[in-house]
Amino acid sequence: MRCGETVGITDSVETVVITTLVSKATDCTDRSREKMADLLRRYAETISMSDDDLGHTSVVKHRIIVEGAKPIKQALGRLPIRQREEVDGHVRRMLER
Image 1: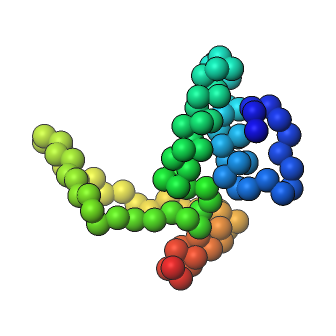
Image 2: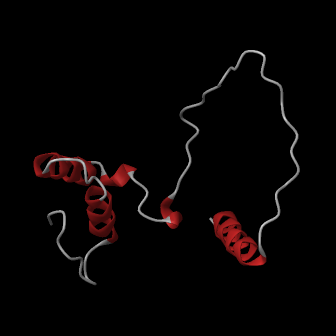
């Protein structure tokens, strides 16, 4: 599938995501977009295609050391009810995994 082609209902999520990502590279040449699509296809298993396939790892750990940094305290920002319901749904799905 080339950038700019229409996406059908039978196309895989992978194809749709890659096509969408490549189509956003408007400042690239056609050749660059083709190379980008090939690269994304080759490493598709490492790219999250939806909210449901996010993972985690304990293989790598890192620390960010910022000299003189002090913790900040900030009140929790209130979300509108509509957004709160969406956030609660995401949290619920993540806890079910």
